[in-house]
Length: 181
Ligand SMILES: C[S@@+](CC[C@H](N)C(=O)[O-])C[C@H]1O[C@@H](n2cnc3c(N)ncnc32)[C@H](O)[C@@H]1O
Image 1 (spheres, rainbow, N blue to C red):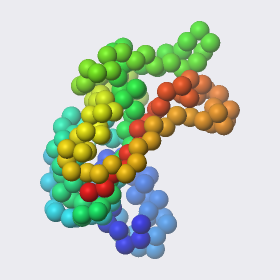
Image 2: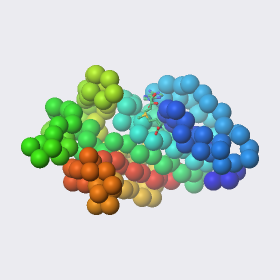
Image 3: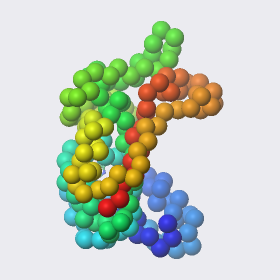
Image 4: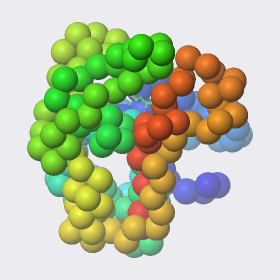
């Protein structure tokens, strides 16, 4: 990563940026408050675009992917995670407990894309549900080459360490994507 220009889209508290700041002698981290729906990057402004658990809040993902493509140098990397479509899909959103007290997340109308209201930290948080195919096809249509895709599920070891995660091994929680311009 040394010497690379990296943009962290939707950094939140800035964990990823601060790791960078703490582990490099050059504190070359700049923070900007921007609406990701209205970005206007310069051509070839960075080598890596990264985003952790943000893009499922974005309504116009086609425009944002276009901006990221434009902002990356040729060969630049776009690495992001989103809540897995299995989790953004439910028609009746929200974690529930099954009779064995295992976490369950009802999944309905997977193919019906668009806004979903969920109660997560606050009531009525709006997330945008997209199918896995839509994420991939949008990348391809924007001109990205898909490098790797992971559907993260908790492992048996993690369930053993966090028994309250029981149920999260049954379906993927996160979609992790690496693409290249
Ligand atoms: C779940 S947090 C993830 C934060 C951080 N990336 C992390 O992994 O810790 C989602 C973040 O997306 C940001 N976000 C959502 N919609 C946004 C938008 N339209 N423009 C900019 N940031 C947005 C929120 O402000 C929030 O910080």
